[in-house]
Length: 345
Image 1 (tube, helix red, strand yellow):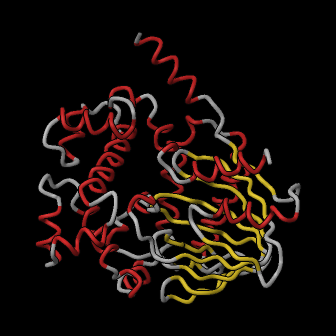
Image 2 (tube, one colour):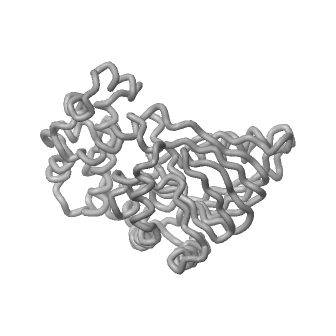
Image 3 (cartoon, helix red, strand yellow):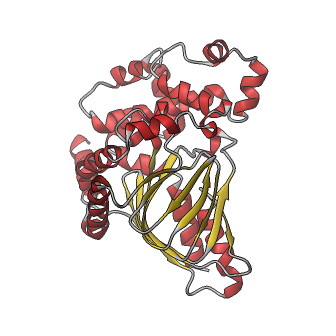
């Protein structure tokens, strides 16, 4: 049985990266705008410029729990209100290197004007109201906490890396080369290449700039502050409604109203399980019990039960499929399913 499991894992790790490809070109005119709205829906609402029909194409790959590739589209406005439900799972950065066209508007209260060669960071949990010209970008969708430093203390929403800066040019060269070789990569390349990419991205962010951004009004909603507090205290076994009520000096009613469904405890458990899965992927030799205790579970049995309920398998079984599970828990899968629907329309 062990030999068979090792064989399956080896087979998966040698598979090519899942390819996500779509264009509105072949659709009837009356379907084009709806298709592009549906594809964008996990992250943004999209409106056409004046009465134009929305047009676009995507050529991307699932790179572990990231999604990376090229997006081209015509003039449009994209916007969203701040995330209102933790069940949306929108804990991601939308990182774009603009190759042509421009983008301007507001990320929360931050005005941005992006040109070809600039790199922007959009937080999918926060308010966005942006207008884009016909444009092409390399787009990387990645978890907020996967940048290699403590983003919970910062608000990178609306951060712009200017094309004139040497570090921006270095990051751009890396992203372009990585995008070019995506068709040749295998699953086994993901854990080798993700660390260098996240380190480069983090190195381009001026600490003075994100320190200012962390004080921006858009970062100060109660729900966002609650999420940041939870992420900082995931390893504390006492983390729960009582700790949050005391730390924020709010009533239980206010706390539960801020979260809505599925609720505070479920959100904390979800974040702990997600962190545990990453630990098991990055440190495969570590005992499951140590992972459970590190992330605030009171005992291994409680962890095993919660893990199987959420992921549909035991932690031991998940070790061989951690990259696949992380992909399945990503909102990029919603894009994949929508693309499949419209590709067969």
